[in-house]
Image (tube, rainbow, N blue to C red):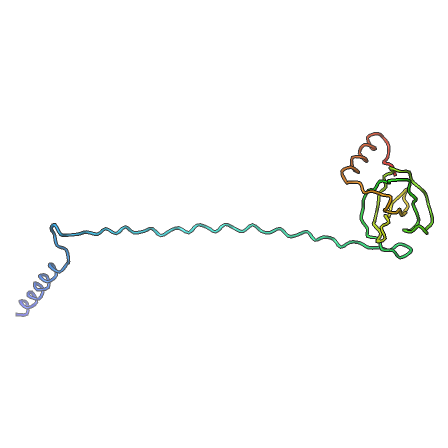
Length: 157
């Protein structure tokens, strides 16, 4: 009898299972197809461009003349606007060493706080009033030096 009872339970389960699967064939039957959306592949984040480090501006070099006037050391080229006296210090009271004619190109080594220009003239450090000098652009000074060199002469001092 046990075999008959097990067989009936199995048969009853099968009968209940088939009609309960939820699909009815026929005109009213609907099938919904769901398309899966693919998972997007992440795009790599571009590597950041490193910011270049700023080149530090060197601190100005300041020296003093014999009379105590501060001179900021920096190279430059000047041309005289008129005949100019070159002196031993940056003052009209200083000893007159020599004079140069108008249009003479001078190589400077510094600018004094009182407006005078420190000049390297024939190996001597001399001073000229900035009122009588005009700065020469670096390109013009290089062209003048190059022209003098190709002529077999040295640049005017």
